[in-house]
Length: 463
Image (cartoon, rainbow, N blue to C red; front, side):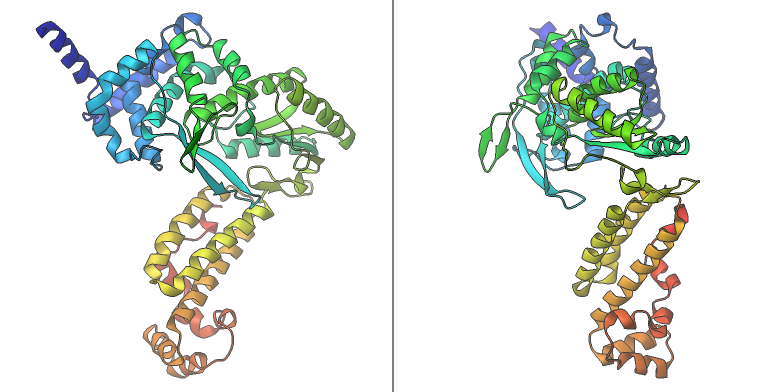
């Protein structure tokens, strides 16, 4: 009995999730993990027989826990938050580990959530796994990604380490500069909802021999969806919301990558966004027809004919960007992305009427910085200068409305250094707030420097 207890305590100590490393020790652990990852031979069957043991390795689990905590996210159907996960694992890990290693672990159904699509074209369905299942999916994903990612196409950029949307856009720009001035813009209809489970598991089984891992991946796919208190079965699709879904989607579309490469096409793929570049419209129509047939018959997926097109790249958007016409092709921000930015800023500044400017800035500044970090990749800085000016005017309008009465407006302008006569004339103006926001008094009182002191970032600095 003592021997059995000591063994259990040993395992518990090895998997103590509360003892995360710090400083140099953590860095050394990451380096050790990275060196171990580099040693893996992709597609070597000997490395795929006991993958579940690799999933349960301490370093892999601690990294998965760190990622899940960093990503935050809402609770699943059991209500467990990310903050409660470590404590739960400390208490229940031995049981969970045993279930994983003997192939009996059963994921819980995902919680259905719908969000508005960025372009306003309807709603996107997400499936939010429980926090525990997100942690386990992350641990599985990390192991499989080390095995699979080196085998994926160089033309694939989505959800892959060391690759980004900016790289995909830059590659598309390079094709245009080389004279491939027509694009086949493919849109896969409800891709994440339509993936065939049997076909997907057939692809996984070609790369994984560990039956326990195959079983848990199938279990994640078939976990079901809870909506309005009722659980419905999952017969197809890889629900967006789980860490494993992007990797599985890349595996499904790896077959498409192989076909496009076999045909010698110049293309860029980011998840289910795929653009193929050709020299003429006629070639584009021919490729569109044959590739659509391949996707429908071989991949059992459907091309959305209303959203797909053969067109000039300047008429289409790719990952939020479009391209300028002319001899020198430049990256520009797509009109829909600009419209989304304005819509969001309007929402934030409209709410400013009933809250302090500090509260407004707490919401507005992070959004602008995040937007800038992505769209600052454009090569048309004038639009960023214009948008920065437009945001400043929106804030001046919001503050002018906050002050409400001529008396309060005059007092506020005086307090901000405006000449008394100008303050009186502006405060008594019957003009609309948008007109007044452009007036000299507000440019002095709410100057660019003043708005910057409140925490307002600019968009043009990074371009």
